Image (cartoon, rainbow, N blue to C red; front, side, top):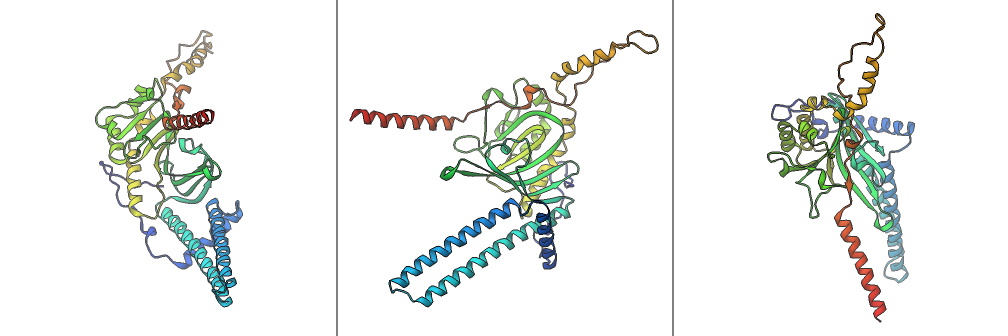
Length: 382
């Protein structure tokens, strides 16, 4: 990926969005479909999203067919409809079902083709689907059936991935599928686990993030930043967070990323959008994303220079041991080595924020327990 260059105010220069809206060449679309099918067969078969679409479509077709036969069959048996009508309805259901299936499959193929050509036009690559993406962000470890769809990736000036993501929690009737859009940006060095919880997308019960963090890890920053984000950093890393989020960097996030939740973990930065698609066929959406990424990328050089002073003690013994080795020329100990800068990395206490339980879940458990206790008291009263 070559992120469009940005002006000093973070506004992106034009990029090539024509593949998202231009008329499609049928021959090129057919060729892409053949290559995609051959690629899927050569790897592990159809993608997870394609298989899900086939299964859902088949189930809907079977249900519609059974309902049609049952309803029309009962009408024929009661004399309210004739046998020819029964045959006509069955044929109509089969034809309509087939047409819907073909239309859905074609729409999926066209969407993928447009994203593929859009990625190529902007020096990126496209992956239709990826099961269980191995990323360290907070949304990538919950539930089951974890999958990213419509991944658009680039390598320059650093690795960036735009994708839609989903996972399922619970089971049976209580199962819930959670949907996210995300942007993953590779950093130069590992950094402390820092979360910017956007104020704009919070709900009635507070943060929309899937996890909660202790208030003792909340850090208030200067200016209007707290009106846009709640910043959480590990205890003892407040000065490091202030080094990373200087006023100019805070301004970039407030101006360009206030609609996203942000997480820094290991050597990754993630932008999260709950219940929203990141990878779409909307040129305006991509213009916004490219502008946001381009704006924050300009400030990552400063982050690359950050070092965790807590790691200095771990590297010091090796330096002193080396300085004690006798000089090959005189046999005397070498001059003491200068105090080394800490190596890239994060001390264990800064790698992950400490999480807490949700007060909504606690209240729910208390209400359920209270209801059970009330029912038990009523039974004993009788």
